[in-house]
Length: 533
Image (cartoon, rainbow, N blue to C red; front, side, top):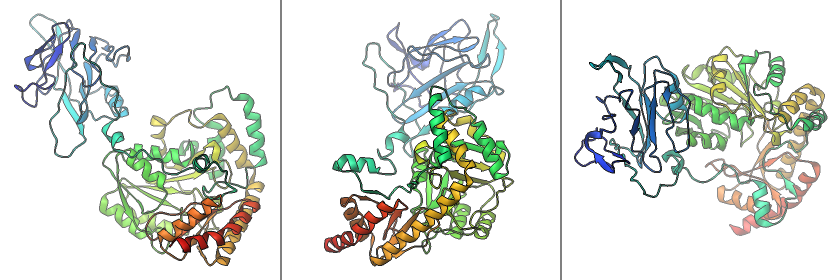
C-alpha cells in the first residue's frame, strides 16, 4: 500500500519477518528504487519488494543475475551486469523497474517480450570505504497507464497471511470484448441442432484440395509424432522457386490470419495509428485492437477499396501500417497492378504497406503486381486456404524485403505450421494442372451464383475471388433479413456489415448441389424478408 507520508516518488515496503512498514522504502539494504535509489550491497542478498496481487516472494540477488522472483518459479541469470528486476502490477498500470548496464540488452528484450516498457540508465560501479562492491544506478520506472491523466503509481504490499488476489489479465485485454471476428457455421449448427445443406459463407475451397496434396497428407500422417520443421525450410525453398525470391525473403505462418497478428505486433503496437478500409477483413481489425493500436478507417468508393484515400490517410495519420486487400473481401472487387503501383508510390516510405492477396490465384491476368522484394515497405501475404482448398490446415506465407521478414523469427510460434500442413502445401504448389482446372471451376461457379442472384432480382457485383456479393436492392436491415431467412433454410451465407456495403449478401463458390440448394431457397428468403420489412 502507499504510505501517506511519502511522496509519489517513494514506495513503502513490508518485510514479512518484521511485520512492519519501513518508511522511505528501506528494506534489507534496498533503499528507494525510484530515481536516486541505491541498490543493495552484495551481502544484502535478500530484499522484499511489494507486489500487488499475489506477488510477494523474496527477490534473491546474486552476482550472476536474477534468482527466483515468483513463488516456485525461477528465471535464468541475465548476466553479471543485471542488478535486479522487480515487476509490479497495480490497478492502474503494468510497470517494470530495472537497473541495468547500458551495454546489457537481454533485460530490455525480456521486458518488451512481456509487453512492458523499460528504460535503463548506465550503471556505475564504485568502491565503498569498506571495499565492498556495490552497484549504483538510477532506476527508471516506465509505466503503461490505462486511464488518461493518471501519473502516479500505487504499489500495495502483500500482508503476511492475507488471501492472494487471483491472476488478472492486462488492462488492454480486460477492455477487449469477449468476441471472435466470425460466428462459425459449426456454432450455428450446434445452436439449431440442424446441419447446413450448403456451406457458402466462409469462402473456403469447397471444390476440394489437390490429389497430390491429399496424398501428401496421408503420407505425413505416419509422421504425426514428429515436431514440424520450425524453419519451414522445404516449403520456403519451394516458394522461393515459385516466386523467384530468396528464402530469407519469405515467412510461413498459420494462415494469413496468424501472420496479420504478427505484423501488427512487430510493426505497430500500442497506440500506433493503423489505416484500413471501413468494412474490410475483420480479423485484421481484431489484431489491431488486440495489440492496442489505433484503427483509422476509410470508406469504400463504388464498392472498391479507395486507394487514393487510403494513401492520404496513411500520410495524415503518420500510420505505422496501411492494410489493403486485392482482390477485396467482402466485395470481391479488385484493382489492376498499375493502380496498385501508383498506390505504393503514394504511401510514405516509413509506412508499412500490407497487401493481402488471399484471392490472388483467382484474379484476372494483370491483377497481381510483379514480385519485387526490393521495396522496403511492402509486405505481401498469400494463403493455401482459398484456391488450394487447404483452409483446415492453416498455412499461409508472406514475402517482401528481407529486413521486413527477419523480425518474424523473433516472435513467431516456430512450431505454428504443422508438419502435415507444410508437406501438403508444398505438394499443392507442384500440382499446377490441378490449380488451373480449379480456378476455371471457380470462375464458372461465380457465373452460376451471379445468374441465380440476377434471376431472383438481385444485382451481382463483378468478382475476382471465390465468392460473389449480391446487392439485395435495399438497406442493411433488408439484407440481414434475407440472410436470416437463408440461414433458417439451412443455407449458410454471410454479409458485409459496414454502411454502404451492408446492402449485400456474400455467397461463396460451392459444389453444384450446394448452389442448387441456394437457388431453391433464395426466392422464398427474399419473400420472407420483404414480409418482415
